[in-house]
Picture: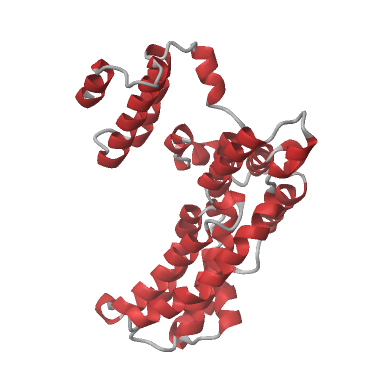
Length: 317
């Protein structure tokens, strides 16, 4: 803060207006606070808002308008959707589906986990998928051996398959990460002019983003398992024991309930909306609509969303 105060009291460099110098000072201070993190990151966002009012003299109503657009609405809706999806607790069924497809070989299971994590993370964000898939990896590890010392490398391979599979997928779609939606918003704000039809191609919708970004994610995915198996040497090359126990647990839970199918249907409808109508009503509107549908259907409580959503993330963006 002292550094920022010192910058503000320096002579304004030639070629810069006083307002530009204030904005530059605020940017430098925000960067320092983001890197050193002496205060919570959302608090930095609040300081930026206050700086626009008290240092730049902007009207508070004008500043408030800049905080809300379709990209921010999309981030908020996606975070709410993420909580709703995780709440359904389909982790064991997901694990069972994976091993039914891949078989019991460790390499195939790890690749399957990274693929599923990546595919999910490309649509609902890597942090959400990591939280949702973590029980899948832990379930397979604990069912393999009760002694943690005997499955350290196996645990590393399985859990990193989730983390890295989800991480490389973040670029796949606009909903794969808040940064994607923000960049789409900036691209449209800077280059699109509604009065000029020639600038229409600067509108990047859901499908157009996927056409360019999804192949990059798919190319990286096979290397996740390869690198992990070269780095860690799992103690078990076959997880038949864990698969047998997993099957018994899934069978004890019985068939999927109506609520499970409704959850899947709602999520698929949200994806369809993002793909086909986001250019008309906005991706944020569809995300909020999906989150509201989960609430109306009774699949998630507002208390769950209120406690599960990181509201500070919305402030940051």
